[in-house]
Length: 433
Ligand code: SAH
Ligand code: F3S
Image (cartoon, rainbow, N blue to C red):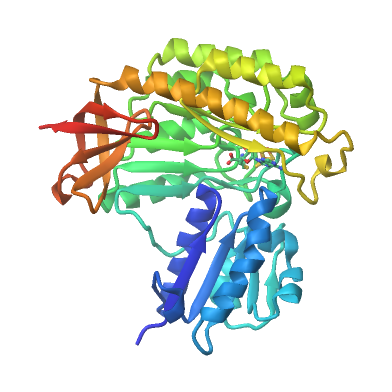
């Protein structure tokens, strides 16, 4: 009987891809098969996120639960960003954990699984050219890493300390991975990095210097690739050349993530984001003027140390001006190993919660307006999922989640859909043959 692997993945899309890589390696070397039931697993892994404090706290209670329900002799591994920053402390606090594998060491999974109380968290480890075995959880969309680590030092962010310095993956490897996915019937390529439009600044070894705009061109001409998405770009590196390619390349989906973080230039400076409120608005204007139906999503942190009412009002001002289609908003959470952890001008937690609700309530009202605008529109949807309620689901080019009555014959197909019913998060439509 084959060995069973249960893996829980938290956090960002890069973690999802790291989990796919580990599943592939464990399958190829040990024959592990995935299970969704932790009780029957021979190996239980949690791929953790440490960007905010809450999931880190949750980790230890969850480990306790897994330890109680696991079957006799099953192993438990902790990987991802929290593994990187807590390292052997995890085994100290939860001695039943068999191994700890950092976010930049996932290629060592087939090795560490045989060890006990092992900790591999080297953030200088270079796996930018590791040839991972193949595994994808979706047959329709392919995540492809284009870089590892992050060279920015945003003062709130722990990621550079858990994923290390930025190294770009050579463009020929990315293009051949896209080609392989397309040959297997995948139509949508999702390029991943912590700062994708910084691509090409540093490779390990000698490689052709290709920037992100050129990489997009090369992936878009791969036979069989019909859609390209990417995350996350950095507003600072959104130069004209990049926005123009985004606008004119028909393969690039017209949804852009533009993580604002704050609308106050003063706070942006304290965050070391490298741009001003005016630059951000200028980039949105350029983008909207070239791609009128682009949908823009963002990340916003409220109550960063030193954020005054006036600073927060600048954030609200940007939110009102841009009318983002999607907002991921967070209350600032101090993180170890970051510069901002030492900042003493903290904002009262209740003030932070109030600001978060103000922002979210305003955004909800925008969503209510936007959904009405969508009613009756015809959009192209790539169907990726069969739902149990007789619907197929997929995303429009500009990233609206659409559900339509239909069966599996629509999976992997792109079809025109007329939107007939709207809500904030999901819209319903009819497939036009
Ligand atoms: N460049 C990365 C950022 C990863 S962190 C990417 O988007 O892929 C994702 C988001 O979490 C950030 O954009 C930020 O809005 C939020 N975040 C990061 N550190 C935070 C902190 N200390 N407190 C609250 N939110 C944080
Ligand atoms: Fe974090 Fe800033 Fe990089 S948010 S991942 S340090 S671009």
